[in-house]
Amino acid sequence: MLESVVHGYLVAVSLILAIGAQNAFVLRQGLRREHVGAVVAVCALSDALLIGAGVAGFGAISGAVQWFGEVMRWLGVVFLAVYGGLRFRAALRGGEALQPSEAGSAPLGKVLATCLLLTWANPHVYLDTVVLIGSISAQYAPHQLAFGLAAACGSLSFFTALGFGARLLAPVFARPAAWVWLEIGVGVTMWAIALGLALGG
Image (tube, rainbow, N blue to C red; front, top):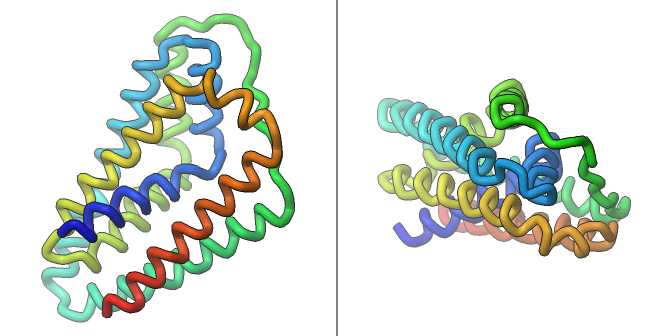
């Protein structure tokens, strides 16, 4: 079960590390110290709900279809290997510093509406949480629940660190080189987990 917990946490964090609209928004709110707690809560809770749906759905299918878990295991290996390769390619292309918006203060309602839109209207969120984490969790039967809970904790810890630690991280990630090393770290993590899945069969 420990392997399920560790891999669930690492997969979730690695998937959401890539900079995107949602992460940029959380970082911007953190830099401005504006409604950070509410934004972090919305992102983490949304991820937890989607991860739960993915794990439960794929877990039910895995229990009903004997070969499903094995198929998901190798699909997970392929995905993680490809995703890791894309992160290495991004590192070779060089990083790009994130420049959060400097717009004026916004009311809580508007901030939460924007956060919900960036989360629930983003197809990549469904791909990462429901499809990918859900399918990978099927390989960890009978410990899918532990995998899913660890993934949700990974999401919570990431958004908490990003939102509340934004001002500490800003000087670091203002430099493109920092994003290069981040991409390399994500790539190594993904390939390590892929190797573990492949050998685990």
